[in-house]
Image (cartoon, rainbow, N blue to C red):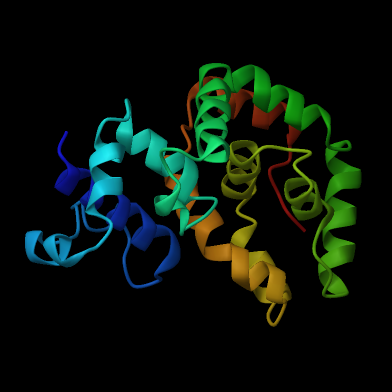
Length: 198
């Protein structure tokens, strides 16, 4: 892969996660960025180094969904490398990791009551706190949000909540990247048999 392609992947994924007007999936995974814009950049060297990274789209994804400004350090930064390793490790044992994360949640009835109670008072739900404190992983959190269709409910109750409004777009935009295999759905069915959020 060349530096220009690396730049386009970075620009496309960064835009997907942090600009409400662009959706990578809606635009059929079309890469953004022109050769002219790339040639005007002073950081082309970083994209040359980035282009040498194995599994480049996954490497960029694993970092940009957390930090949109990671490009300057993306290749040499130890944290970026660790993000990618953690992301890869989680993907390779996702069923196990999802089960572990689901076991950290209370039984579904109590979990629903806690979520509803927090939302009624305009507070962040316990599930969101678990994600913020890294008690559950991003992929598990996104799968639960998707499976229980929580985003519209949270949007309605958390209007004006700075934390939710700041983190909402990158979280929602990550959901399509998370695999939804029958094995993962079976684990979610087992944890949330009602599949109803009240």
